Length: 214
Image (tube, rainbow, N blue to C red):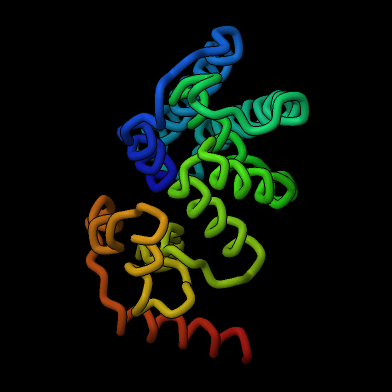
């Protein structure tokens, strides 16, 4: 959960893509969705810190967030079906980020459906390659594949350990990250007070794969 909120803060801190010329109505609508999304996720983190994951208030808050995500997804799908992917020249930087984050928080079938559109939007300069990388990793990990850029972390419920989910050729991850404008894996996971150890990552993945075979 903290991973998602920190990714949101990182996205909002990025420099703008080009000159901003708004479709003001859509820009305001998307910005409101973005604020609502981040507000409720901040609130659930505070509740978890105070009450723990299993408290009824936390579960109720997650139900509320899931409902919000569902409504946001419906509306964003309508916007995308009507307009295609909207760059910052149409909805501004926050509106553009909102489109991505709502898809990032949507169910897997929506993410898979929209992935080709976001790929094309990156080629057209209407979306960030960094955002596409996050979604590529999200879809890969959700479908049982290894991620590419190392953006997806997981918290082991038994040990409490936070770690990077399996990725292809982990020794080359920084080359891949650089190719899409991302900083190093060391810088990225430092946001969660983690240190990158490629050999430890390989051992964890090998153990994980062995456990799946047994």
